[in-house]
Length: 476
View 1 (cartoon, rainbow, N blue to C red):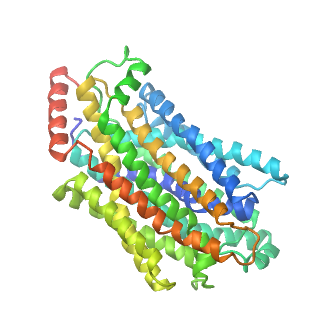
View 2: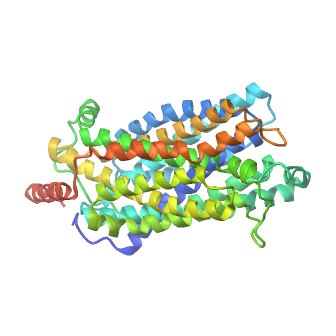
View 3: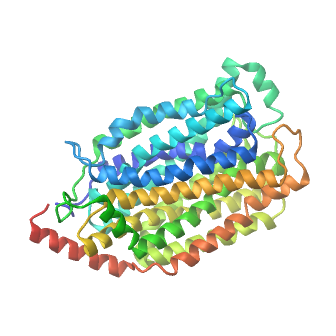
């Protein structure tokens, strides 16, 4: 039955999919700007523009993937087969993107645009159908909350694994294959800038991603079918229905602002620690520098927030929990600018901010599933892939704008990749990027959610009405 209890194994399997996606997403979100400026060798402004161009058009490609997956017919279902088809291309393109060719500046820039764009396309082809699975595994709102929480929990676990492994892997491969670069780069960078270290480090993470995607494919099941026949529904009608869906517009906007909050903070962290905090420390036995420790503290706190989100939102409601969490994250983000340059204060604030930020994403994904039901009740059409692709679109737009703004702001504050020490102006820019800019994004997300109309009571009523219609139509 569509409302059957989902077993633990399937919830874990579903979580594995986002663990894999997040392992790469964190690499692109937190390390790619640094990679392109200090390893690949292009300017911060050029990298920022490339992020925006590549991800902007790819964000709309997500919608095409959603439309295509809604119409996919296979013995594996609509959405699951994409996990099987694109697991290996996902890993391969990741390694290719972080390869540094022996080209001039123009050739490098062309290579960066092509490989980064192709990577985002492959990411869409596997991640949009994966996200859509949430809408067809179960129609029960509470089960969806649970699945969304498992998804986000494993996403942060995947990110945690990336932060634990990536820097040591890069340093290990650099030391193994190009030891002279390690000696040179130890002074100038928090992580080795040896090109061979980066391509092999990312490639190793990619192999882990393949395994996780295949487990997600094997352990999940599609159950929910739509009430009406979809044969005669045009793409034009699907898009028209979507564009007339007011809750969807609100959720895309507030989700975009919330993702900008994370994107700007994450993109500048390596620069902030190297240039402002400036602590020459490696944790014994791991080789982790302070930036990696900062990321790990954040991911551990994010995970706490994700795990608490279902319980807290069940008591106070998704909308209210979301609003309070994002507002508190923004408030404490301001503290990052006000506190002295003290690593203890910085890590404490990172922990607190990340707990509240951790509440936001599982609620966001769960609310997109609610919008699928809302639209089906109004139109008779269950465009799961299209609606979830729009959530992926807002995610990519958020990270695209965040990464682009980070590159541009660094350029405005005259960041110089080859400088032995950055100017006071540049360091000031890095400080406000990790504190005040994200706080503004948090306020925007809070204000947007004020207008979101689907309360928990309304969502429950919608679910009950749809289940009655499915029973009458004989659907399982």
